[in-house]
Length: 349
Ligand code: 13P
Ligand code: SF4
Figure 1 (tube, rainbow, N blue to C red):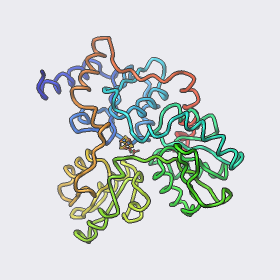
Figure 2 (figure 1 turned 135 degrees about the vertical axis):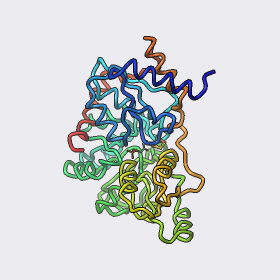
Figure 3 (figure 1 turned 60 degrees about the horizontal axis):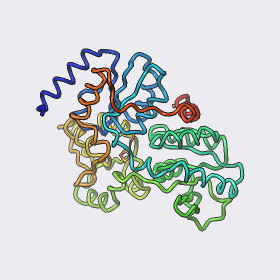
């Protein structure tokens, strides 16, 4: 077995050999041992934009999760192949919205609301859900673009069907002035809207999905921080629940969190509610600031963490040897419709 430094040297050598034919995008939640080799890092929106802009790399080794690699595949050309170093790097939130459940929900919602609904899907979703969204006039959103896309959607239709993260949908709509009682959760297991309100009042239908990493931050954590560190600012990701976002000082995408801390004055103190690898990286990059995780036990994303040094090396070696493993390829029909929903976002982001 190779030591860590042997693996690192091999990766450096392969990167050098493949040059600009290889591109390694890395999401901010990736481990340091992987992110050190990324050609570019970013939040979901930036990584989608970078994939669309790159016309040169024949091999894109995506250090992130499955839906991100699918997105990269759909936004690059046929000569460019996308690989995911570990196929088990999925996203439990994306898995919460199944295309069959979605196809079942749609006619029921149409019956309730007529032709007044537009779907919006968080990029944290399968290509099939993105295709459904594209087919029905809707668009993708990321945590960075959600506000603009919700505003746009309301120029198209009276109501939004937001998949699969109820929290991002609720937090974004609330920020834009939609009252909580005008939002209803769609339960894909019962095929019912969880609301006491009459249908005409509902403006936002929220798929009952969530991110288990961000549900690890609670109002109790915010109360503890307020008591223990009265001057500390609390900054969270909008995948946290409405209650947590309301109790925090600010919320935004991974890029927003990084930018906010970069701009913060020396000596300021922060509690951050997002994935562990990013929080630890921010802590180590800002020794002049007091930074803690909002949940003292930290919150790892187990699937993001599946991309590690051995998997990255294994995938790169397979490309170098001309027998690549783990290609992510969305079928042509799905990709065509899904691209429509992605492009509706990219032209506005
Ligand atoms: P962003 O990087 O767009 O904020 O997304 C967070 C996330 O959970 C990705 O899985
Ligand atoms: Fe999915 Fe949450 Fe992990 Fe992001 S942090 S990949 S939303 S499970």
